[in-house]
Figure 1 (tube, rainbow, N blue to C red):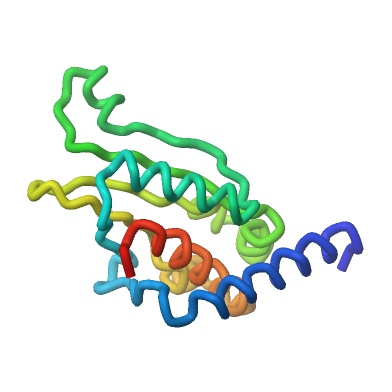
Figure 2 (cartoon, one colour):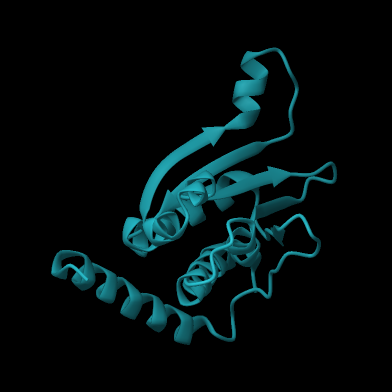
Length: 164
């Protein structure tokens, strides 16, 4: 492995291992409930605060934030009414690109996409695609530790809004 890649990746892995140890009892037990690979975590805070907390936690972890898409605003601009819905896109290239090197089609699912949406009852949900499901979708069998790490990170990020 190239030294320029190994050092940041090793540092990132060590940081995430520490996060996992610190949060091992506190992270929500979110997992995909069906064959569609969708994971949902209910927020204990309103939409704007959930977005703010998640973006702050992403920054605090040193994860690269790429984009925020306010889907409800886009819908309103098109004359369509849509409940609050915001897509956050973020990731860590030394980790995420490992999935793409295993199967280039995995680029369809990387970087990480986390949807914050509000249901008819006013409840806010953080929604993402289960990483084990992504691995199966792209037939990636040689990155188990990396998929587990990605799951741990997203659970940690969403724990900032779940109250668990």
